[in-house]
Length: 128
Image 1 (cartoon, one colour):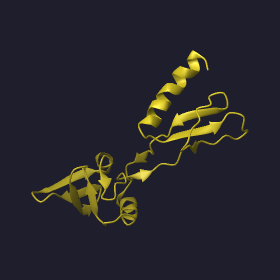
Image 2 (tube, one colour):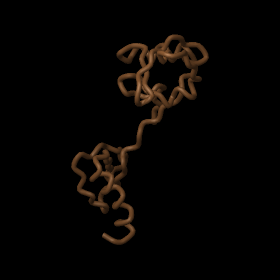
Image 3 (cartoon, one colour):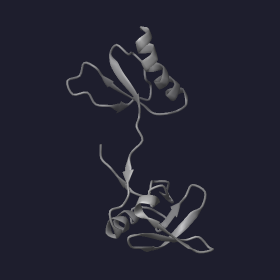
Image 4 (tube, helix red, strand yellow):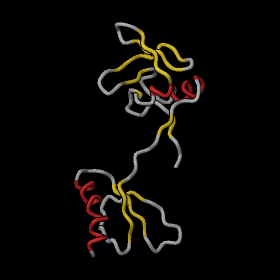
């Protein structure tokens, strides 16, 4: 291994030591695919490695898309800001939640920072 390969692989080894998912693909394959690698060998002459990218979510485009996605998550109608759970009380151009003191409105764009109660981001998963 030369210094350039060591610079390339070091942050990936660090991420692996921290419990992040590492992906690898064979350099010689005609159609290489990134696959989760639970036991990476870090053979940089034969494989490329990367830290598995986080999935990307986009805001809902409208109330219908939001409603359709909400039906896939339990408990139904609940979202979180990471600390507290809130009940969605209306859907329109955005959402309105009840927080026991007052009602707060979020646009779909700002609500993508929230999660469903099951931990899934409040938005639509974009395909890679």
